[in-house]
Amino acid sequence: MVKKRVLYIIFLCSITVLHYVDAKKTHIKKTVIITGTNQQKSPAPTNTENISTAPITITIWIHGTTPSIAKLPINSIQQFFYTKQGIFDPRTLNPTTHRHQIGTTLTESPLFPAQHFYMFGWSGTLSFAARQKAAEQLYAELITLCDHYQKTYSTTPRVRLITHSHGGNVALNMATMTQRPTDPLAIDELILLACPVQDHTAQHINNPMFKQIYSLYSTKDFLQIIDPQQLYSPTKTSSFFSRRRFTPHQKIRQVKIQINKRSISHIEFILSRFVRMLPKVLSEIKTWASDAWDDPSTEHTLRISTHNQKKRKFQSENPSV
Image (cartoon, rainbow, N blue to C red; front, top):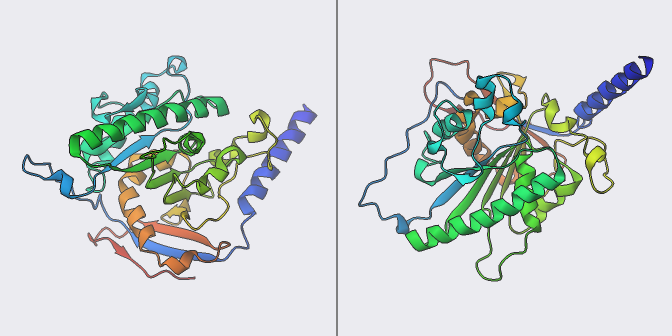
């Protein structure tokens, strides 16, 4: 009993250290106001629309670690985690499933038109081997999907991946795939929501496959860092737990998220409130001046406020140090 208590205290101390390790960093904070849903519906495609005149962007949502559906006792919990395998259209899911609701919410924004929005389902098993296997399947199916767009629209689509938790490490593992010599796969935008930063995949952000990366995290998201990578990694790791932030790189934007002065939890990144905000969040991050990212030690925080219900327009303040 005493031994268990000692281990528990060590665990809590480790989490505390991980939480405050960046306390002395320089901070740049930006506040935005989002009231209501504050989004426009995506315009419906028309038969006369000449799609080939504009670049097409396909978006794929990739979920994180999930429990076995068969072992979940309550139907509502099963519906929360249910997914098909491989790349699929979320509109084909039962409307009661959470993944269908994510797709419906995101495609309310013109940034993610429903006809080019997909999801990728994998086993969700907490293991390096499962994530590697999922990456191989994702890579092969993305190649097939891009070839389909090339044949259908006579253009190679831009590719955007939105990932949650270890879905980000599935995506990063694609850097280990052998690219075809002609027309290699490019990920134009990789959006990582609460991705556990691990030695096994962290270096892949440098791979030329990934053109631009956005990593959003929260300092109160303990599930992001609680994964003990050292316990099941095939090689020795630099830290026992996972981390929040990647080593700074010119093509990655790492931003801490707060809503109404509160850091959010791991699960909140995929609940409807934040999912509905995501297009505006990405838009705001992209408006940050390029020199705001020059100092690799700087920590960026996006503070979202939903309290001003009288103002219907999306507003922002200038960045302040």
